Length: 260
Image (cartoon, rainbow, N blue to C red):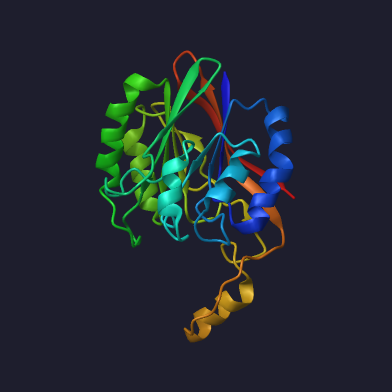
């Protein structure tokens, strides 16, 4: 049996700090073979930089995935080409720089991971996540023992539909982007682990990681404001998955949360 932890959207310094402070112990206590983290909000709540990516990887994260904020930090489009353990969404145009998947290995077992962006309520130029996932699975199956698919999407229906579409063909379909952990972690009928959203790693006394007051005021009057990253009730949130090495099928999935 292998264990994999997928950490939800790391938000700003509070999210980075709890990963730095707690991940090494979590890896040891749970005997984790793989740790994957979405870090698209790691730089002040929007995007990522080479320095931040290296610091997160140095904390015990094996691979970093990204989402719709992938290009928010200036210069990252050049830095990402130097990052061998970071991948951008696979259904962005092929001309976009960076890896569209990663393959990790532990104890002779190879796990591939890739991200697809949803298209419902999302303002990104992206191919169909369903067809992209089909293509990626066909490409990756000869190269790995298990496949983890991250669906970075706004609509619950789109995430659930992709889970059913891929059931039995991948080890897990894990939702991110909405920053709110959901209570639907399950094994689908053909053995694929699924959850709509693994939650965020950052401050929960917030609105999706941002200070409450300016967000509420923006809803009230519509005026633009600066949304600073909040600081209170920091948690590391993700999904813990057990994988049967002999069949590369998920045996268990549960929401995993640690408070600072």
